[in-house]
Length: 451
Image (cartoon, rainbow, N blue to C red):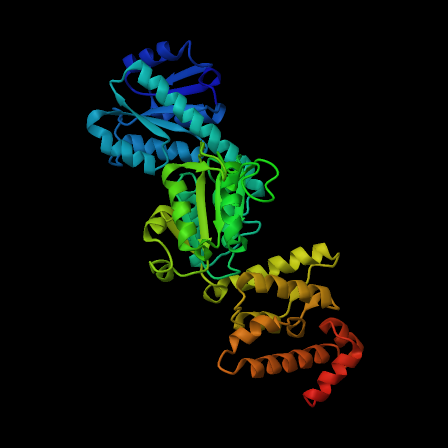
């Protein structure tokens, strides 16, 4: 926001300060209101809102709180959390002023001040307020609360970390098993950052071959290799000014790691076939399903690169360790797919809920999502029963890892066929259709397993 368009309220019991600031700001802002008695704050803010409030730390009135400024700051924030407050403090009260930032103040000024410094502080505070306001307007479509859900303590801790680290430019490393939602956390960080309105570029490093790695990330010049018919910018350039998300970074070779490290250290890329460095300004987020202990193995991953990409790490727990979220997510997915397939929102019965809670979900949230989609599609009534919940044979084979693979697969296939036939009350045609088999193929399997 521009200072010229701002309305500012100044609260200080020193009349000389009120006069001096009013005269200074008279030609710099849209409106200046001064008040010497903090007891009048409530009535003033009830009648009018201000873009900024300047508040003294100490008043002559006696309030038994240890410090009047913090007391009145709290009152102002209670009236409107969006109220932006700049504290006015003497040099000896700087510790209290710093504490006020933790209590919700936007900034503070130490008196006596230079007029230029005061104006610069007000401009900077309004600038930050404008960015935060833009982010809040975008939060209606935020991934948090719409796609990234959780009421468990571990997820609350992740949401808290996102809130703290998103507005910074710190490099983030997201660790977690496949299917836990690492990409959603990356999106949430970007959406809540000061780069939210800039580009968000995702690269799946696990899908890049050795020959494509440099071309995809750093770009190339026409004729630099066979098939390079045009100049092309790489993903680093595409993300310039915004956020670059490197997924599955644990899959890249030591040689590729060295090239990536060089780019991150120099903040420059050089396209294949060129000698001209291109400056880049990105916020880097990386993710991997490897545990940090494996990444620390220097035979597999460069330690200097780990330090470069891991200013802050977020460990996403598997779904089996956040049991409180299973039913919340199941209901969320059931609602989504009911709407998609034009069905009434299904209700999970008690046995279905118990079945979901007892299953370990080796495929994590992704497996739960697919399970609920299948259940919604195949359910006959408006409710979902335990028989509607058929877990993935692919993931189920991973659950029972004690037996040889061929026995596991046979057992999984037999149990799956039994469950589907039971679900359809012995109707072979409907069971075959759900299993993706012909009636003849299903009969062959029935004979094979003596069903």
